[in-house]
Image (tube, rainbow, N blue to C red; front, side, top):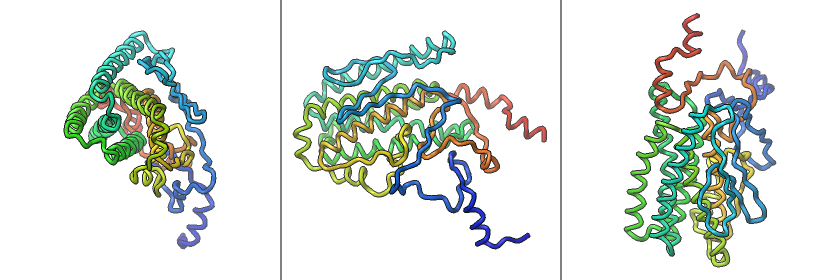
Length: 356
C-alpha cells in the first residue's frame, strides 16, 4: 500500500520519539536541543545499573564546594572538603579495594609532585601558571579519545557518549587556554616550552594508564581538575576586587555567551542542558566561570570511575522499546586486558546470531 509523504509526516509526528543514545535513529522532526527559551524538561539519568557516589557541588552565593573522593593538601582558606572515601563498592573484593587504594596513592603522589614544581616556578606569575595548567588539563581528554578510537577499530568498544563528553571537555579546556593566551600567559618562551613538553609526556602517560586502567586514568584527571579548581578559587579570593575592574577577554565572551552552547552543556554531565548560562561582565566573571567549569570536570571524572556510568547530558534514561529496531549492539570492555580477553570470548550477540 502506498503512502504519500504529507500523510506519512502527519502520522510520524503524532508519535513522540525520545532520544537517549547517540546511535538511536533520529526522527526528521527532531527539535534542536539548543533552543532553550523555555525552562528545560530534563529527566535525571538512571543510575540503577551503575551505582556511583556523585560529587557534590554546593553553591552558596559565590562559594563553591567540591566533595572529592581522595585526600589532598588544601591551601589555607580553601573551601574544598577533604574526603577519604574509597572508590570500591562494598561488594568489591579485598584485592580490588587494595588495587584502587594503590592507584589513588600513585595518582596523589604524582599530582603533588607536579604541584610542588609549579609552586616553585610560578609563585608570583598567575597567568603564566594558568597557561601551563590549561595546556596540561586538556591533554587527558584527547588521550581518552585516542584509546577509545583504537578500541572501536578493533570492535572492542562502542560507547559514543564517552567520545562526545570527552570531546566537549577538551573543547572547554581549549577555550580556557585561549583565554589565558589572550591575557598574556604564554608571553615567555620558557612557559610555552615547559607546558608543551609536559603535555607531550602527559599524553603518552595517560594513553598507557587509560589502556591499563581507565579507573586510574579518570581518577588522575580528577586530581588534576581538583587542583585547577583550588588554584582558581584561591586566585579569585585574593584578586577578586582587582578582577572586577578589568574587562573580559573577547574569546571568553564569545565562548560563554555565544550562539552554539551544545558543547558547553555536554561536558557538564550532572546538569540539565541549558541549566547553566553564565554572565560575563568583567574578568572576575570569567575566572568564576572557569573555576566552576573545573568543578564540573571533577564531577564528570568522578562519575567515569564507575565503569559504564557515563552518559551524555543530551541523552535520556527512558526505556528504548520503541527504538529497539534502530539500536546497534555495543561492544563493552574495561581496559586493554579485558578487551583482549573478551575478543576471544563469544558474546551473547554472536551466540544469538549463530542460533539463527
